[in-house]
Length: 157
Image (cartoon, rainbow, N blue to C red; front, side, top):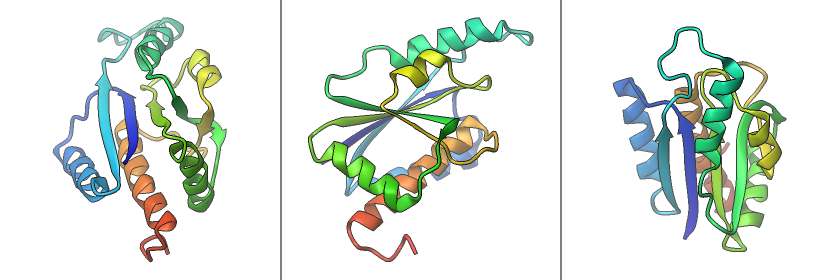
């Protein structure tokens, strides 16, 4: 079974977000083993944080103890904007070799350059800035869509 991990800065705070995440994980469970790890924001609650230090601190958490045989996908507005079909095939190439895919979602201030540098793929869901909790939900939906594409299901149309 495919194994994915999502590492995201910040806690899911709204009940509707938690419900959406649970719903997509349930739908994905026959196809993918998926784990979500929520990491603390790097600003320590400061209303005027040092942005560079915040990003660097968050990067440490995102990159800490990556499993061997890992494909790192960083979600960032500067990344490649792939169709669902292309994304499905890119992910399939990795998982066919038994590689775990780890998706990294930054916090309010975005990703540190070290995260983009470490990533095997920097992926964008568009040029808009999206709340990181919403990105988790969009990512889960896209993972379900990629499975539908790879299995020839009609969901993706």
